[in-house]
Length: 86
Picture 1 (tube, rainbow, N blue to C red):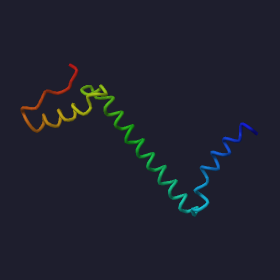
Picture 2: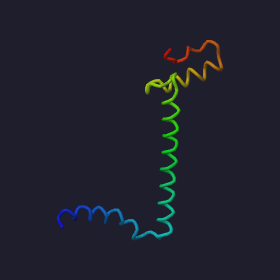
Picture 3: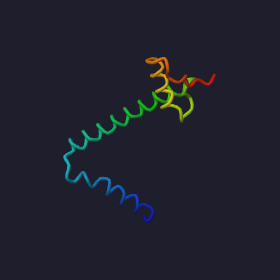
Picture 4: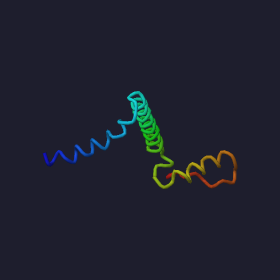
């Protein structure tokens, strides 16, 4: 019983907001939170795949400079060279 006491306290604190909330509101907020979490996961996975598979900007510290360099090279001839590792 002594091992279960902290778990019971944490569970009670987690369920405390339910006392003043309608079940429909709780369900809506839960589904919205899960959907937002899935969306953030998809964006993070996509960015990981994109930047992980690119040869020109594969190091973590060069995402910003490579993006700026790539965008500015396409718009002006005097921009710095690309970040390629060739």
